[in-house]
Amino acid sequence: MDAIKTYLFSFLVVLVVFYGCDENDDALIDTEETFTVEQLTNSAYYSKEKGGSSVLIMEKGNIIYENYHNGADENTATDIHSATKLFWMSVCALAKQQGLLNYEEFVANTITEWQDVNLHPGKNQIKIQHLLTLSSGLSQDFLTISNTSNTYQYVVDELKMINTPNSKFSYGPSNYYVFGVFLERKLKSSGISKNPLEYLETEIFEKIGLEYESWNYDQAGNPNIPNGCTITPRNWVKYGQFLLNEGKWNGVQIIQSDLLKEMYIPKGPNPGHGNFVWLNLVDGYGFNENDSAPDGSAGGMIYYNGYTEIIAGLGSGKNRMYLIPSKDIVILRQTQLEDDTFEDSEFLDILLD
Image 1 (tube, rainbow, N blue to C red):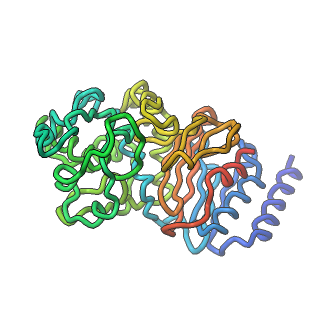
Image 2: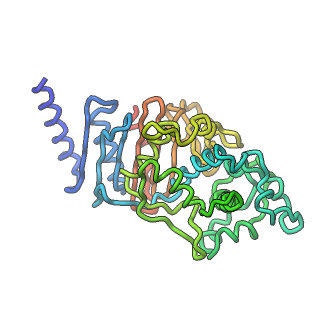
Image 3: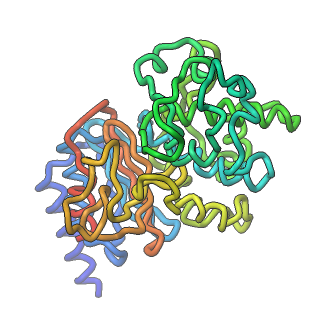
């Protein structure tokens, strides 16, 4: 047995040298787990070649592999961009649990400005469920929203209806910012003097021991909702495990498991998107209907070759969190770049094929 362990260790060393890892790379591998040494090492090499900074894998609550590259180490925090959106999925489930919202309620009951149909035609028909499935019909206004001084005020006053609710999936920031305004007003009306980020921090992050490095705000002091979290892999992975634990942490059920599972059921026009979360279901798609798996694929647009259970947070650069519930696995990939040629299915093919 000792001879076998010695051989495996020697084999790992050869692989690390062969693939030319940076001096500050740190790999922790348990060869008795799901993945082979070759799969793990090759996944890190792929990430590195595409400009990434880290790959971290947690299985059954334990980190079984982490590799830092292109100058990064375990203390390197990256802006995960739109992967930030995944946090709000659990916030929605918790808010429902606490009686703060109902998915079938009309947003205009809380954002009362939208009750004026002359100024805001069509907006009084938007339900919370439409926000969660990104099918509200609201315009996205990417550039304007990112440059406005008060994003919350802008999405209340300026967004236009361009589709009827639940008729079309439209990826972008609008639905998240509207949700931020909605939640802030719901909290205030319930006597809770917190903004949405403070609610996320106290109700979830602090309870699971997650600490982020920074969060972006607009000039008016509103925290960004769809993006803006900068975090290290070892902190981010805690949230992934919290989701795999179905809302439980250290024996305490923070969010009811059935409310989290409900978020993974596609209820809008895009089978590849649940409630504020990406899914790997067949026929699902990404930013548009052309961003999908090839015809006849066993999986969805995240991983073509199966594992339709995959749940994901996807951010620019390509910052990624993939969850595989049946294997109790969290897979993270982070990068400090704004954009690169990393492909989800190629990366996961290395690990899962």
